[in-house]
Image (cartoon, rainbow, N blue to C red; front, side, top):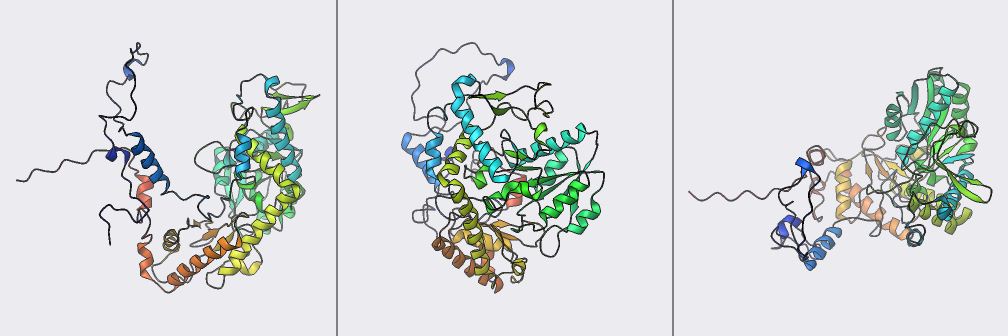
Length: 502
């Protein structure tokens, strides 16, 4: 039954701002002012911008109601596989807001930001220690940006030895940004198949290696939630062919404190601070994707970087022929990284310590396997029989009733109060459902999620057509997501006036 207001109990329906307010009014009074001469030439605006004005209570209620229609990690479990949507400790936020960190400016004199530079160096030391790599580039802004940094280091190293290689090999189980980054860096991308266990086909890789291969980009643990047991053999084969190993470190949270990628022969690896070290994730805001480098690639790392010289820290920003950074491939960003992200990561590292970070990995893997073993009797788990998973559990829609799919199960989860898991990824599994519970969820929250998931899966396998209508209780029903992505409505238009009766 529909209500008169469109509200569903305390889930309030909320129109657009333009439908509530009026362009003729505003909740703020501005004093009259004398306009200065314009400097925009023919670009100067000659009419109002048409922004609706609201009173203060109207504005507060509007945005509060909208916020209630968003799902967030503060509301419940966020099971997006491959994304590690875990709790961000409030301690980190408090530390990031301390004066001297929060208000640091990238153009301040070096002597006035010694503490900030020391903190960047501290985070870098943690990253090199945890990965067993000798060097780190702190300036890349995100995972894909870090991938580009690593490939540019590889390109510079190859050019330094006069080796013009043009192919990057990417396994089927790698993250989707890997082939995109390789192509952006000017390489030709070729796929390496997976074996029946969901890992890299080592023999297929060895067969393809040759003098034209610059690098292999491998995700470990991979996007099937599985560790690559042949990683050292892969690295040895790649190095024997004169190429480099790039490891996508997005899933480092599954092995931090347990495995050092440097020991596995990795030459470059980006680390998503928002996945492993709890800095905020998503929203298009500031990010950080530091890249750790092997001894072979360290001389080619980008500028700028922080270095301790004597008893002070300096920011090295220029190449000089006599210094150890003379072979740097150049600069990736205007400044030296995201201070807020470094501060939050440092807080997380120091508050957990080495033993705590090891437990992060152990608990992430434990929770994922709890999900896997609690659902595998009902859902198809393609790689479940091959042993435990790492930080995420992978299922498929095999066995669903005719006409029902992964999408239907995901939409029904919304009605149960959960954000859906990752759908249709990785591509190597038909109708994939990738679930990452993270280490910050309790057993009680996992049990509630499992109960909801099982209930919906049972309906899907029984062919319950009502799943196609889900979500039923959400503020918005099922949308045409393809149309919304390809033809988004970005401009508000007033409703057409009603036609006068003839």
